Image (cartoon, rainbow over all chains, first blue to last red; front, side, top):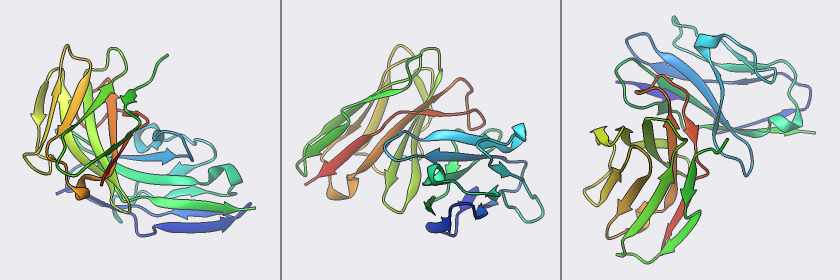
Length: 109
Length: 115
């Protein structure tokens, strides 16, 4: 069965410091992994997906099939990065995305 | 263009009453999803529509929950005989792609409070 684990409910970093939000998944096939973000008083929106291999707002995420991880990283955190981040897994034949429980990131000025 | 819209934005209801939540997806999006967002629980999948049909109702938590979609567009989620544990934010999303591989566009949610 598909499962997504985000071990940190809360994460605080200082502005300018590196940030890493952890995501581990369990799925036996070839998954599609996503990071969604919800800024304060805004709707949930896609941040990036592993298949596009882009850097969005300075964030990157690499799919590590050996460790079944898809950690989100940014070398220098900004105050505007403060938000709720959800890791999600999709798979061929599935009807929905499986979301983790989310990590609330706070960037301290 | 217009995004996914949901109404009402907030709903307070008494335990035992029925509620209807509405979702207007992005025009042309054939796939529509309902999720429930509870504190500390992440997003819980409820139901998925492809067009007007719901091939996957496995996430509905009980038979008090039902949903329909008409004209391949608007969807309503109905909760009968509401209970306090139904209190949550109900999110709707739509997608061009069917299944779980396409980008999903979320609405602002309906915050349901059952007193």
